[in-house]
Image 1 (spheres, rainbow, N blue to C red):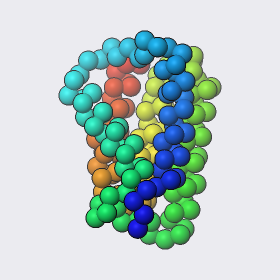
Image 2: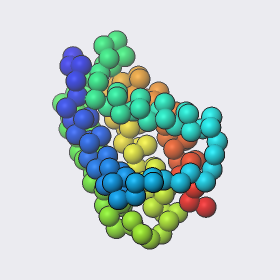
Image 3: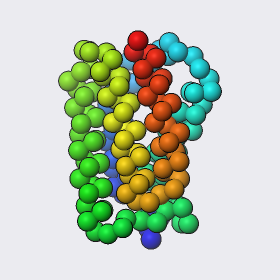
Amino acid sequence: MECFNIFGLIFVAVIMIPNILFAMKWKDGFQNKWNNKSVEMIEQIGRFGCFGFMILNIPGTWFGWWSDEAFAIYLLVDTVLAILYCTVWVIFFKKNRMFRAMALSIIPSVLFLFSGIMSRSILLILSAVLFAPSHIMISYKNAK
């Protein structure tokens, strides 16, 4: 049982690339029109948990892939989701605000939850369950 997941690190790095480029271009950052401190706090806890537990496998809370086939499915699905995420960023960067907001919140939510289920990581699943609804709700409220 490995404590470090290099593939998880790669997936996190890939989905962070457009976010880093956005932050470099717009130094003032993202304007949050919907101020709900509780939901924002839950989202941040979930976000950092997802990032951390995609990369680190904590013994006793991570049970690994069921089989080599499950690992291959994990790699395939996460690769498709990461590429889709970056593609949505590129194609819809200045268009279709609601679609973009929903896609850019749902895709990483699915990636984190799917990764947690496939790797049988309790902490990643819990983090994704915190992150997904709060991130999607914040994105939706800001896109309206």
